[in-house]
Image (cartoon, rainbow over all chains, first blue to last red; front, top):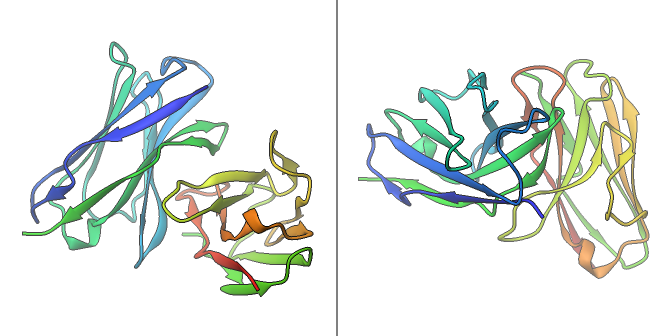
Length: 118
Length: 107
């Protein structure tokens, strides 16, 4: 059974970088069949797609996300990561990682709350 | 960005009653519309993909229909465990987007 687990700081200061990692177990991140995605959810904006990445490093990201987005993959650890730089309070949300089968997220992590506050 | 408008925002329903949730897209997205169920403190769970395709393990009382700009999720005979928020999601046109959700409560 595939399992995804987000990890990272729960509190980030404004203007700093938010960094999260998703560890995948029960399946290989190097599968040619899947992309790996990040979503977030906040009371103000609801669910938002942030972006997704293939194990080769090919990425797609949402231009509506104001904070610059960087995604990467570490195939040796079966992990993929998200960085949002110069965050503001608007980036406070529950962040989810997920697997994309085709163009939809079929497996999601449990989510991790990240609060941007000084 | 494609805007997905769900209605209603909230529905209070009696057990065994039929529930209908609609999702309207601001542009034609073909059948690239999916439905998720989310319970408190849980991540979204995929219910229906590509407008009407069923998902293994999801009860058959959940069905989807529609194409283009108008879509519907139906729950044929509400069960207690169906109390949740339901979201539509489009992956037909970048950037992908979600509806604001419909909360279903058991009356």
